[in-house]
Length: 172
Image 1 (tube, rainbow, N blue to C red):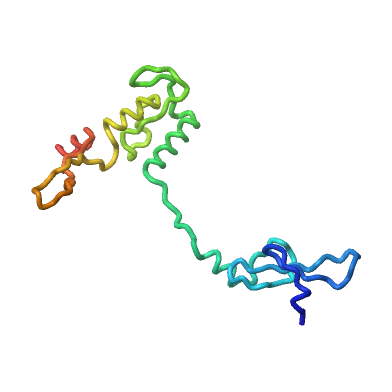
Image 2 (tube, helix red, strand yellow):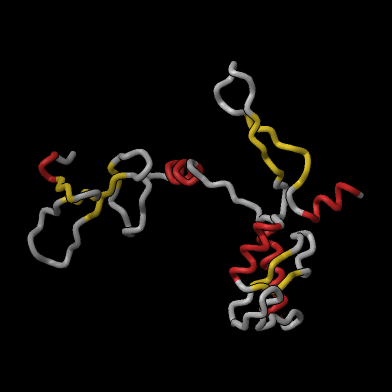
């Protein structure tokens, strides 16, 4: 049995003093388990962090992040990037809206369901176009104040969509 005087604590690791002075013998290394905190060892390699396989599995299964699926927007952007690099889709050097010549022309999607149907716009025109005609389920919101019984205004979403493309689909 080892006495507490034989154990030298240095930071997160615990080393056991070997009884010999000099020589080529390395000190045995002991560690605290990253999951349960128990001192274990001697360890064969310095990368070992857990005292047992059960602690390793428990540490790896807790706090695991859920993998997210790519959104329609990300899939459409990736498709355009692939076709531009493959040469099947050619990126122009002029903005379709204002005619500015630049090497930073962006592909602006009309609809993410049709990833290869894009307008080639400069950044400023792209931002303005997205504000004028937003994609997705954006609806107009209007503030309606009621009688004195409710001091806070109530928000009601109207059924009319903001973007022109959605209005045409709704009318059809």
